[in-house]
Image 1 (cartoon, rainbow, N blue to C red):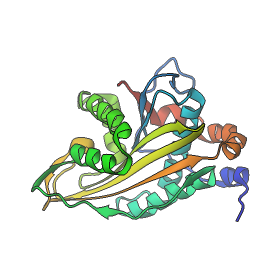
Image 2: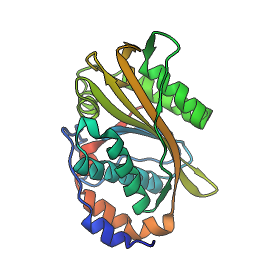
Image 3: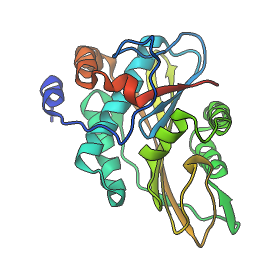
Image 4: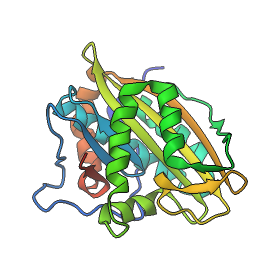
Length: 251
């Protein structure tokens, strides 16, 4: 069934987040500090999105804006900690309705072989299995950079507020790249429930009897013929939320 993408976008309702990233004062409300020819990573609402050096600046903006839009739309409908599965399905639905071809995926329960497990190591192992070495190289750099930020760093405190409560959390790790002039997005979604208080969710450590982790991974491609017709409308829809809810991570 065909969809009127502009009509869908006009009618789409989006929600803000609990807190906003500290914005750079030299950026306009709709600007992003995307670059050319270098690897980059961004905190994007409750996601981490990275780029290989080959993907150009406009395409980086398109990925970041569409991922943010889909998250804010999912937040509007399913804001609760106990609605993570519904949130995920809505996230994928919105992306598909604005020009992405992303197949849904079922969540898999992570079974740790050891009694103690670290979320950082689990992320790397899962994404390595799903997507291979290129993904893991950049994500490892990004996680190292984030780990090096102080607990009081504004980006960290905002990311933490947006990704978890005391006992439940959800976040996404994504990598965008170009192949044969097509933009692809590889993304893993992680859900955590724990009887321990969750702190620094990307580096949380726990015993497997105290914490449960579920995940799914999938790859999508962007139909630029569709997206270029609604690009300006996506930016207009997001407005100042672009710089409120997206922040670069220096890697």
